[in-house]
Each structure stands twice: as C-alpha cells, then as structure tokens.
Length: 81
Image 1 (cartoon, rainbow, N blue to C red):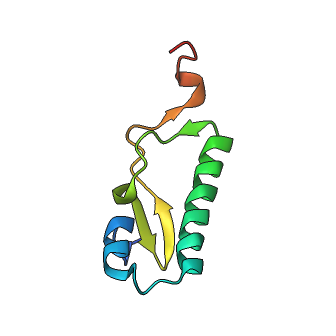
Image 2 (spheres, rainbow, N blue to C red):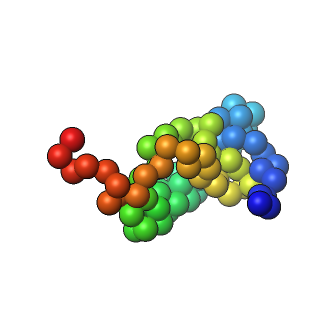
C-alpha cells in the first residue's frame, strides 16, 4: 500500500499552529473540502462513523479524510436501530 505523506499533519495540529494566520476563506475551503469528501462517501453508501480533527490529514493544504476502521456501508447498518 502506498499513501501520500501528510506534510501538515492532522487537521487538529494544523489548526493549532495556523488558526490565527488563516483567512476565513482558507477555513471555509477546508470545511467545504471535508463536506465534499463526506458527500463522496455518502454517495457511495459509506458512513465514516469516526470523523474528527485527528482523522483528517492535511496534504498540500488539502484535507484528506482518513481512518476508515469504523466505517460501514449503509446496507450493512440495520435501519431499525
């Protein structure tokens, strides 16, 4: 398995170091990209189930959703719960 190296670390670490330096447009871009990543997962019937700032890596200023260990396909989840 070959993975991209997340040069900026986790979203949590990235925001701790850069939050005051980032413009609101940068923050909105990060939020939008995460939302688009979730939309892609949901369009493919996948639920992440463990999304938080340590499971999002920053690679070349782009957020990447990671850690799919708890993810499930929607058809695997009981709709009666």
